[in-house]
Image (tube, protein in one colour):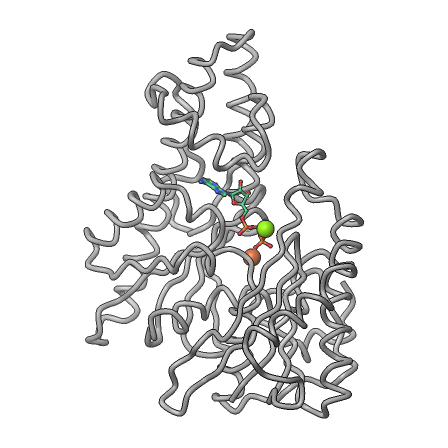
Length: 356
Ligand code: ATP
Ligand code: MG
Ligand code: FE
């Protein structure tokens, strides 16, 4: 089975062709991603209107490229999968409408894919990971700990109650005068910093529920920065290192609890439990090392797919469509709507017509 995937939910326009072999193995035939980073960097964040227009301009060409690289023509595609939420509505409309048009003219089924499902199932494409497992998604728009029980069976165990972790990195960078995107800039600065100079808060640490909160951390960074302004390069480095340490300690506590809960719920399963990370923040070395150490401590496998597949791409959307087909889940009607908000544990159909 061959499927065309389309992703336009945020600031990456992407198209991909993925095949699922009879033995269940997935193979990426093409995976084209066009980042809009440059269009947005002057604004210090993603501007929805600019993003939507950039998707319109790029998508047709990218789909063409993905088909050419995969050496398949449209009629040879067995299905179309397009991200239909959550994300910026303008971009979602562009991608989903294009997917619908292709499905219509080729008379092939359309799968309206939840972007988070794409991230959640990637480890099965890259590592053939069996269910169940835990997935930590840490990106610019999401911070979620998700139990992945099966295709279409997801339980959100924790989420951020305010800022996403990537957003906290971006805002911290902005406060300190570092460039956008903030994550790589903060990480670089932190290398030369003293992580113990500033005592920043560790939100929700010690609490039983598995949620996250990062806005207090950002406020504390602002306070520290104002108190010692003007900032020297060393000050900036020390704040970044202290920020990263606070983040790592917070994740250590939150995720540690999640791993323990998973162990408790699946005590009778004898495959080794696994934690998968996804999202741009997974590029952070200190965070990676923290999660890895935590997994070793709890006897978990630690799976970090290649960065290209951790950040936004269309191969994961295509793969989610293939997983849905293999699980014999129904395709979606052509009047399916894009959703800017769409919790992973609700189907596209359930959400139809249910308002914002
Ligand atoms: P979505 O949330 O919809 O998946 P996104 O485009 O916001 O989309 P990604 O592209 O996965 O998310 O990740 C971008 C985020 O990752 C940014 O907030 C960026 O600062 C952060 N990031 C990237 N590299 C690093 C790093 N080395 N350390 C920390 N954060 C990083
Ligand atoms: Mg992005
Ligand atoms: Fe994403």
